[in-house]
Length: 440
Ligand SMILES: [Zn+2]
Ligand SMILES: [Zn+2]
Ligand SMILES: [Zn+2]
Image: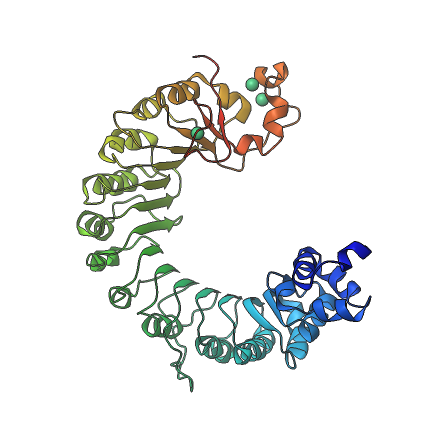
């Protein structure tokens, strides 16, 4: 290490160490006594994430470091990690575990138990591949008993409906604010979590093959955001008056109206953020839900709308019903129609600041399309973003790429991911706002 670095005061040196790769920190630890002590300062390790793949490094960190921000352990590494974790004093904030079979589940249980005992666990992500429910039961019970957890994300590929009730010696205090659960049904584990943390849960994502635990969701005073699959059960959640964000994500759904969801939209809470994500071109379902949203109490206050699988002609017809709209994302299989582009206007969407679309064909040519240029020219405050992420083919033979206008600049500096607009950047603009107007 440069001697001038050693002249730094302790706190500055700790900040430098925190920027180095963990392997380098361990190497510097051998240089002198001062570095040996400072390299184990909490601030050096507070932001470090390691995975079971970094074998030696993870083991060294678990033996020496006072804390880690994140530890990720996948199936073949669970056993080795469990043996090291057994004696660790290292406090881990975020833990990601992927369990492939019954043996993994046992090791994972031991790992959660140790980190839970040390305190400090705030975020757990569990990926549970197919395993017998009774083999997963101890692990789920252990996770359920973790105190002061804020975020829990569970992907569970077995049907846990027959799981025995979760009777934990240590009933956790309500603490979860975010719960994402992907599973077969409202099983006992999910229901225990929803019941225990009802007072604190704010963001809930439930992707269940069957059913929605509406009575539990309906009694959450702080629920702000709900993402789930399409279901008629939603009509039972009309009284969630503080719900602000709502998403329906369901690729396996039929193209038929869903009366319960329509009812929820028409008579439910005033939503500021809405996302519908279905298989492309569901004209019947898309029309029913968008029409309900346009007639709902949410329409005047809706600020962010994201649509996949809803026809752009329907969106064009509904846009003027959303005068507060600030961000619109539309995912289509083809270039939006002229009708859609015409509907985006200061008269119908006066506050629209971001329009996100998927470019078709070459994104460079797409940005030069007269319809795209026109929508920017007519909407002075608008920013157009390309989703994807978009890429430029090296050998694109469109006339714009052959001319090489913009080609290099679109390729550099996250070029294609800019916020394209008809103005030069001004206060309030995103940092990547860039003027993109050639005809007008
Ligand atoms: Zn091109
Ligand atoms: Zn160009
Ligand atoms: Zn701008």
